[in-house]
Every structure is written in C-alpha cells, then in structure tokens.
Length: 72
Image (cartoon, rainbow, N blue to C red; front, top):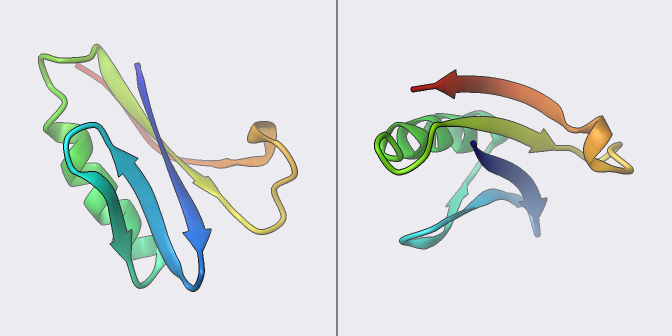
C-alpha cells in the first residue's frame, strides 16, 4: 500500500511522487485532487494507496487526517 502524504511547505501544499519528484498546489484541496489522480496511476504497481494530510496541529503521523484510501 502506497502512502501519499500531503504537507504544507512555505505556503504551498505538496506531496512526493515516485516518478516526478514533488507535486505542489495552492491549497490542500487542490493537492488532494492531484494526489487522487496520482494514486490512480499506481494501479498495477502497488496493491493500493492512502492519501493523508499532515496538518499544522499534527505532532505525529497518528494525528494525520486520512482523506482517501483505495485497494485495487
């Protein structure tokens, strides 16, 4: 299962991709939409994916918000 973690960095929201480095967006919603599209490209390479949001109040991965999960 691939974990896609969206993080805030210097005013933008980003997550890392295996192929293209990092993807950046203006808002957490736009980053989540891009992460969803990226997650679907992982079909056949991973058994599924989970999109998590690392927000300002999170002190550990247990505090991240799960936005979406998909098992292929």
